Amino acid sequence: MPGSPFAQYYAIVVAKWRTESTRLPVSFPRGDYGAPVAAGAVLLGPANARNAGQAAGLPVGRARRPREYENGIMDRVRIDKWLWAARFFKTRSLAARACELGRIASNGQPAKPAREVRAGDLLQVRNASGDYQLEVLLLSETRGPAPLAQTFYRETEASRELPLKLAEERKAMPHFEAMREGRPSKRDRRQLGRLRGRV
Image (cartoon, rainbow, N blue to C red; front, side, top):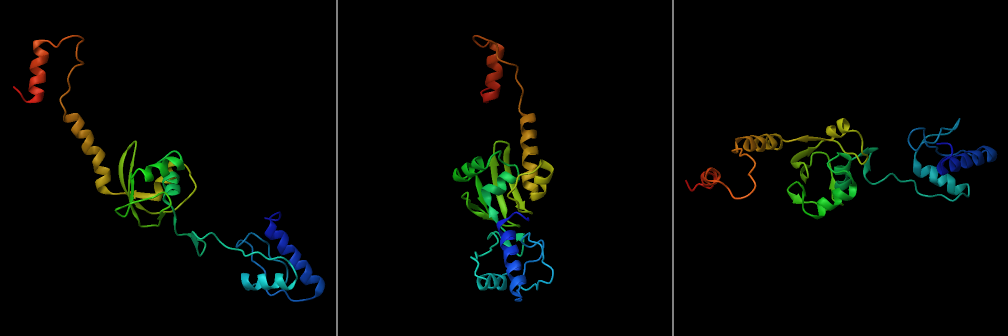
């Protein structure tokens, strides 16, 4: 990222090093922080680069990765972000509201919106389309297409069977014609009596 503040800072340090003929202890490699490697630069570590900048008389800030990342890999994410990214809720605020109402549980415990999810966690999610029991496989805080979102989790067998059981129960329920307007006839009353177990 040539236009980023870090790239500009990096260019100033390298230029100062070349003009004063002093050895810069370190530079960042390409891909780690997005800055290119200067010719002849020695690759050691961020702490030494910070010290070199201080020695050159430049204001130096501390370069840090977000705390959700461990060795460049996301190892935890807020549960409301994950639920939104996995497409269980249309907005993150709806996911947070579901957490506040007690509709989300993580490893058997009610989850607040800021609770962190890790790979392998078991979640219970209740939304407008039903109840789900999930195992978290992948972490993400960005929302993508549905086929990608389905790779973030694995639904348990019990959770898959529940909608099928409910559908079978609905099919097994007796189907009655729409009630006529006005008072029920004798035939209608007999059917209501059978339904209520009176006959």
